[in-house]
Length: 251
Ligand SMILES: Nc1nc2c(c(=O)[nH]1)N[C@H]1C(S)=C(S)[C@@H](COP(=O)(O)O)O[C@H]1N2
Ligand SMILES: [Mo]
Image (cartoon, rainbow, N blue to C red; front, top):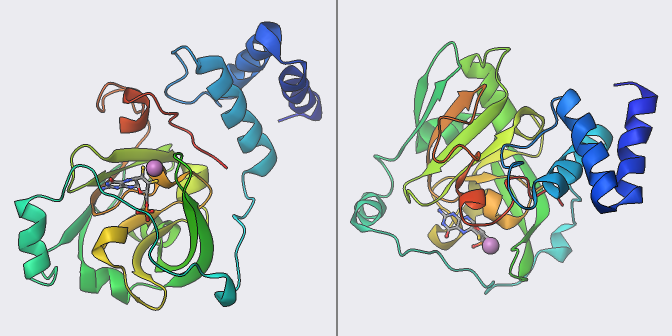
């Protein structure tokens, strides 16, 4: 990326308006910075946000807080739709039979139990989770860095995205490799020093602290590494753009 095109992309954003968006979108296209939901009404705006974040902040860190800043429960949170019989069965078994499968563009497709995930190297961080509807809280998250797991299973060089699915079929998302390999992106199994509680996504949740709460999908069961999002769902990258929200929810 040359300095000139970087400046041009930013200038496009500052100029704003249709012409600025169009110029930015054109540059983004050229450099592969187009999000999968770029075709809709808000497409040019989505492209601009994603492109600028990726050019300027690929490796930036989400803010981390001190233990004294951890929010006191109860936090507002709701799971929609309610957890079904399948989940309740797992819960009654203490999640002994819960599995997380990693497949797609990986040399060694692998299935992990909760014990396997807990045995991986762990990182903990105190970060903010914000819902697009307004509530937010600060908590400590404990988990295996997704980057470690991707390296362990041999993610292939052509990988561009990681799709993640939940036991709730309505909830599936994807992130690009900049977020997938980011050190703060965790397969979280713990919160505030204990196992991750069910209302917060236990037993396993993908925690993506550089994006809004809806990208941190609860109850994850499968990760798929891919170079193309078109063949998943409606081809927009995840469930959120199918429901009118942006695929990229960077904050
Ligand atoms: N499986 C699943 N994941 C989910 C949700 C859900 O209902 N089901 N809600 C999402 C939304 S919209 C937000 S804002 C956060 C809320 O996280 P919290 O309950 O920790 O506040 O989880 C996200 N992940
Ligand atoms: Mo949300």
